[in-house]
Length: 67
Length: 67
DNA sequence: GAATAATGTAACATATAAATTGCATTATGG
DNA sequence: CCATAATGCAATTTATATGTTACATTATTC
Image 1 (cartoon, rainbow over the protein chains, first blue to last red):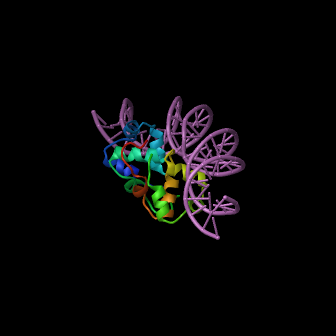
Image 2: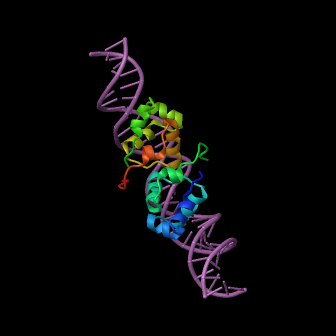
Image 3: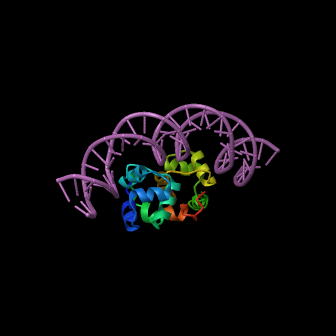
C-alpha cells in the first residue's frame, strides 16, 4: 500500500502534526499511512487530499500490487 | 459519500454479485458502497477500480461534502 | 553538543468496515 | 403469471482502522 502522501505533505509545507490537526486525526495515523503499513478509509483519503491540494489519483493511485 | 460505482459497474457489464466475486468481497458490501452509506477502505477502492477499469478519481472523487 | 521539534513505533481501547446469514422486494425472461 | 436473477436491507459477528498514551530516535537550531 505505497503512496505519495509524504511527498505531497512536504510540498504542502505541513508537518505530520499540522496535517493531522487540519484533517482531524492523530499524528500517529498520518505516520502509519505514510509508512504504508495500513489501509485508510476513503473518507480519510479524501480529507487528506483536500488538505494537501491533491487528488486521490495523485496520492493514492499506485500500481496493481496494492500490497 | 456519493460515488459513481454503480454506473461504472454497469458499464463494465457486471452484476453486484459478479463484481463482489471478482473483488473478493460480499455482494452486500458492494451494495452498501453503491448506496453511499459507507466508507470503504482504500485497498478495497483500488481493487474495485481495477475490476471496473476506472481510476479512483473517476469513481470516488466527488466534491467537498464527502458526507 | 544540548534543547527542542519532528517522526517512528508499541500496547491497549474504541469505532466501524466487512463478513455472514437471512429475508423481502424489484427486475427480467419463460 | 410464474420462476429466477438481481438488488435492498437488517441483525449479529469479526477484523481492523483510528484514538490514546507513552517513549524512543532522528533532525534541526541555538
